[in-house]
Image 1: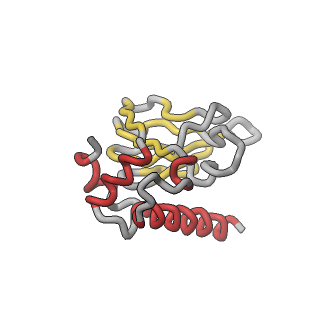
Image 2: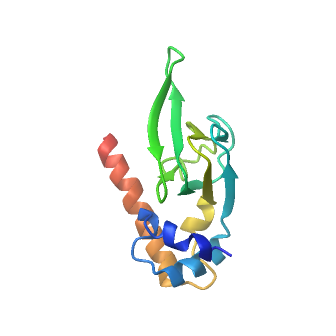
Image 3: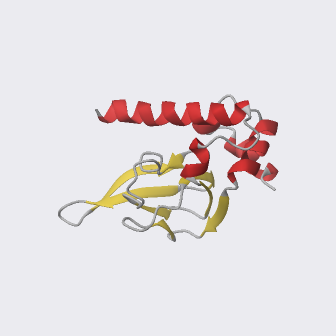
Length: 146
């Protein structure tokens, strides 16, 4: 089911060190949701329920927040293979801290955070690699912010 996106997703930091064949097995465990959006359509809205770590498969999304003056501030523009929501995935807040909109027509895969950190039923090495990659990504971003 996910094979058509494997090559595009193999550039994502989260899947570093995982072969396309193994990645397809990991997706079978994670059961990600894939959604398509039209240009300017909202993908996620700040303050709404967090739906999972987003990975852009095709197109571009823009991540924004409003500042105290009510102006929109662009935090990131993400293209294929790039993620959003990784810093809030395990925060316990349960809501999107920023809004995400389709900058172009796009396709996004959402990975449920709880399934990323849990061992899969197969106890595969690829899932352990996924957890290690996630920790490296979050730790790297935390260091930059610190």
